[in-house]
Length: 197
Image 1 (cartoon, rainbow, N blue to C red):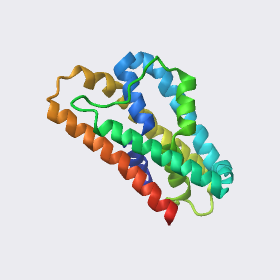
Image 2: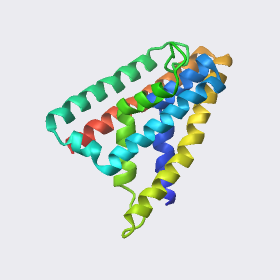
Image 3: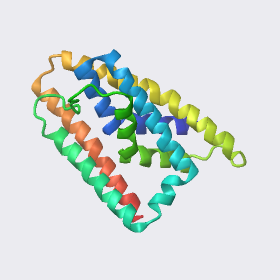
């Protein structure tokens, strides 16, 4: 169980569309305004997890043409985000929010977020806990994931506002950008390796 909790923490806290956009909303609109967006992300990520658990995501992705198109689109989107972050210059490159997003925006982002599908597939298909109690294991995993997911996203929301108020040296901001971009590229490489395997 500890291994599962550690995997949840590491996979959720790494940069992806959800956490980066959460930080962007925090930077643009503040913590309180961002809570509605985070609620939407929360609903969306649980809907994605439910699609993975019930097999709906697998059914849709069983078609090789659909799977290839979605994988290519997801990989290109993640690569685009990585490049956008890496070459943002001397400003920390959280994804900028153009208008105050609400609950629906958060739900919709998770519905198209390739990291959400990959992470939830990893959580629910790996890390067996109880061999003969599948329902109990799935329910426990939902609980554990959400208990870790909520504080991580609230922290990213707070960090978005806090980092923008700091006056970090340009070289430190560039290093933060490159680290976030490297994490995004790692997701692309792992997804490509997984699809070939």
